[in-house]
Image: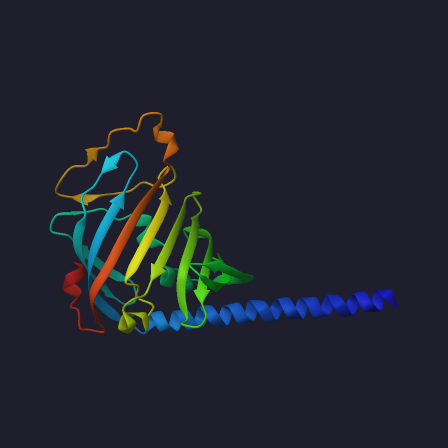
Length: 231
């Protein structure tokens, strides 16, 4: 009798786990469909970079995107954006073969969000594992934590103040935090960094993270963009 009872519970647990995984997959599929609704867009950006012991000026830039994966950024002065952050875009991750794991719920920014882990199947994927916190009321990704196979982690926090852009999961503000010990941060610039003065009693090892804040505005969505823009 005890063996039978154990078997029944085992079946219930297996079915329950399958349903949770299925539910998580459905949520991610809904997000992917919202994102793919923006087949193209352009926007203006204000980029602020905080790197340990370096001073970088605030930059203005413009971005153009065209599905499935064409993007181009122009800045008349200075721009520094972590290349790995762009390569690890959430929509690109969802387009890969993945395994999803329902990780329950997590409180963040005053809300209770759905927590889902994502495991890419392809050996060519740059990401080892990612975790996304989803606002299931508005169906928006609020926080994405991506760990690369090299060991570096990027944490992206997203805000959606532009209602028209939010329909396609396009944020109005993104804050990226990355481990500078694990990532090379390439720069495209027409100026030089200035070295910050070290704070007495603190060494460079005290700061191992860099932060990039991007404000998006003037979105123009689903517009005709010539391929020459991306040449």
